[in-house]
Amino acid sequence: MAQAILDETMLLFRSIFWLTIAYVVIKPGVDFHDAATALSGQAVAAGQQIVAEQVQTIECDTIQCIGGKAVLAAVLPTPPSAGTSPMHDAPAVLVVPYPMPRLGRAG
Image (cartoon, rainbow, N blue to C red):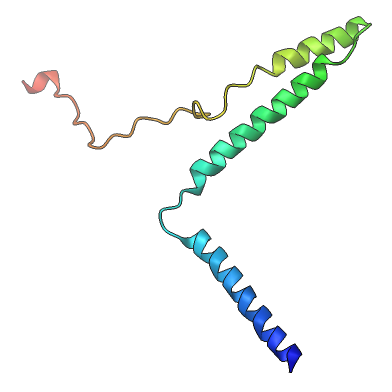
């Protein structure tokens, strides 16, 4: 008897959990693209910062090591602050198409 009540309770809790997850995913008005873009930009910036810090802590004695650090410093630019600008500029959206210009011979 107690096992049956426990099974029914767990079924109820699992149903509530999965229905809540489905509602959050399917809910209208949620824009995951912007959130994912911002999060990926922050992750890339943090990764570049960690790599740059690790490269700076390396002590170099040879020309080859110094050259390698210089190449890595050139490849890893200073990361922009996250969320200030998009990675790619979006093209201007034309609401109404422009008509073609009138030919000179048409008067």
